[in-house]
Length: 250
Image (tube, rainbow, N blue to C red; front, top):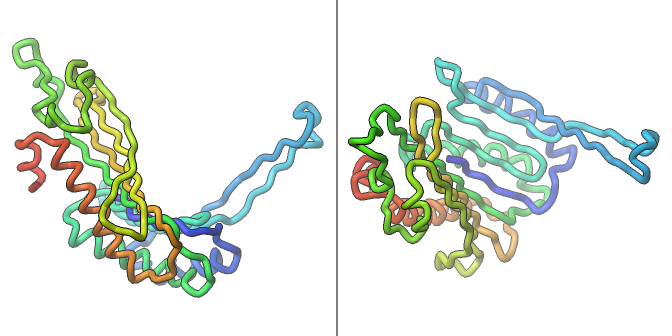
């Protein structure tokens, strides 16, 4: 799950330098810290004439991370270009993970709070995966989309239901979530793909709250993320089969 806020303007040099303090501020929780750089290539006029090729780069942000004992990423806080995001790679519960994400984001926001750079988009991206051992799919026990998904879901096409074990549906739409201050854009990517020894059923939901007026009231952010979480749960309840909903506690 990724929690992100997008600002109106690219972070200036003073803000980028201020982000460097996150290395010490969060060292006990996010001990891996790195600067991020961008590389831009500019082509002017005749591309054959290499005198018209310009290359530039520079410091664009920071990323602070933590890792599990097996080397897999656990958390990442990124402040780059005009976005601050906190990503949890092993999700446990909304109460636990959202509280930690808000704490990380607030720490980074302190570098931007008094600069006049306002938040214009709030994003919650959630990726759910269900794994099925391919050895369990046989002629006698064929693939059934209903083992994971609700075949009658508003978000799954008849073509996907009838396509066997490998399929993909991608769609986007605006939704009214009873918040007059914003518009909510959903991008939903549903798929069933082969990962060698397993069939991976994936639900990738990117929910964006596009604010009609940008804000500097960062205390509203937690409430906005709560709205997006509710929107995600509504979709998940519609997409999953009853058995799958029981497995994940919905």
